[in-house]
Each structure stands twice: as structure tokens, then as C-alpha cells.
Image (cartoon, rainbow, N blue to C red; front, side, top):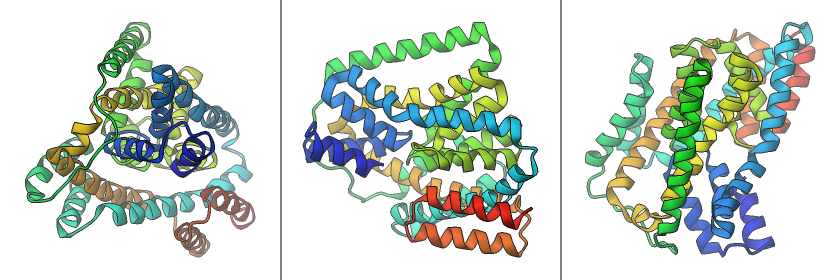
Length: 358
């Protein structure tokens, strides 16, 4: 999706030059949240300020939200039908393949030497032992500051600080706080949903897939709002939609509290990222040059490899692995490794499942 945004913003419309766009991508990867959503918002921010970032943020996320909401409604009403059960029987193994592929891809980009591998393995073990992933992530970052001594991070930037962006970030933050206070007094359940999604978003360094272990932990293991199977079904539905994988938050919100839950969960999952982008863009140069920040984020990204590895095992343990599921899961994984579009894989798995799991 980032490549498509670059083609449009840099090559087709020339809203940004290539250097400015690349700096924006680096910034979006350095802060938590769904990277593609933030890159879209960054293009709007650099083109038309905060109004532009709001426009591109909404424009990028709205189609995925509408489709995910529709799929959530259909799932809630039809999930008991035999044909639907057959489809999701196959999609479960496809989700496992997707998470395994994400772990491999994430690992290739983040595990540079034995220290990164050690952080990933210890993280997976701690998560398995039931330690809060938020504690693990903070701990990994602090360890990384010591562990990666002597490493060089940072680079040059085409953007300098902007007091105007800081002021706009303060305005956005004020709106977020006011919204949270309103939810707290109007509906405690909606406030609880919003608080959970904000916490996940603020710790999801490395993009949308980094959110899944955190969302799984909070929604299934801590709150008990959904069981593992239903959560996996939500991840599968998220792969059908165009947009970020954390659109699964819409599914979670709807299953927990209907339409209001879906809207609040979605906004709470993405709004903090927009605030952080506007604020961080004012300090792009010092962020990119900070050695401490580089060490911290390197360890955090390595920890997410461990969290994804654990999530793949967790999901896999919930699948009854008979021969047809094994074949379908391996076929999906091979297709993903060969870079076949995930939408085609999900649709193909659904069609096979209708026949194979009747």
C-alpha cells in the first residue's frame, strides 16, 4: 500500500518529492500505528496541513471500515449456518499461514544479528508465561538501549521542526481527551473499548501486524470479550478488506457492542496515530538522528517478531489439524511466500473450504 501511495503522491500528482516522501515513510515506521494509514496522512499533512492529513486519513480508512462493518453484521447473523462454518474452517488455517508469513517477513527485516534473535526469543517466552505484552515491549526497549551499544542509527532529513505542527498536535490531543471524557461519562463500556484500542495503537511499533498480538492478548486473554476462534475469524475478514489489517478493531467493536462499539473501536485504534504523526513531524530531524531512539525501536521491533511467533503458535493450537487443513495451510503459506495477493488467497481458501469442510 505504501508503494501505491508513493506512485500517486510522488509520480502521478507530484505532491511531494521523492526525498520528502522517503523521510515520511521512515518517520511513520519509527512511531507506533498502522504504517500505511500514517503514510497516507503524512502526504496530506505535507500537502495541506492537518486538514489534508484528516482528509487522506479518512479517505484511506473509510472503505475498509464500511466493508468490515458490513462483513461483521453478516458474520454475527449468519455464522451459525453450515456453509459459513465451512468457509471459516478453512479460513482459520489461512489466518495461521498469514501470521507465520508475517513472522517470517518481520523477522527478515528486524533480526539483524544474534542480539535481535535473543530479544525475539525471550519476548516469545515471556509472552507464553503470561507476562503483559506492554510490560515486555517497554522492557525490550530499555534493554535495547544497553544491548545495542556502538550501533549507528539515524540519518539526514529534508524536514525541520514546525511550531505550527506542534500547535495543531495540541489541538488534536485536546479533542481526543475531550472525546474520552465524554465517553467516560456517557457510556463506560464504550470508554473501556476506546481505552483498550488506544493502548494497543500506542504500543504497535512496526505497523498493523504488530497490533495483532496485543489485540489478541487484550480482547481474548485479558477481557475475554471474544474467544480465539471468533478473533481469528475477525482477522480473516480483515484480510478481505482493502486497508490496514488492524481494521479487525471494527469487527471486535461490533461483536462487543454493536454499531457504537464498531465506530468507537475504529476511531480509537487510528486517532492516536494521527496525533503522533502530526506531533512527530515537527521533530522529524531530531527523531531520525537520535541514537537512543534507534536502539530502543530496534529492540522493540525485534520483540514483535517474538510476539508474532507466539501468536502463530497460539492460533495454530486452536486449529484441529487433520490432513485437509494441513494441505490448505501449507498451500496458503507457499502462496504468501511467493507474494501472491492475500485477497486471492483468502477467496481461494473460502471456495476450497465450502467443498472440503461440508
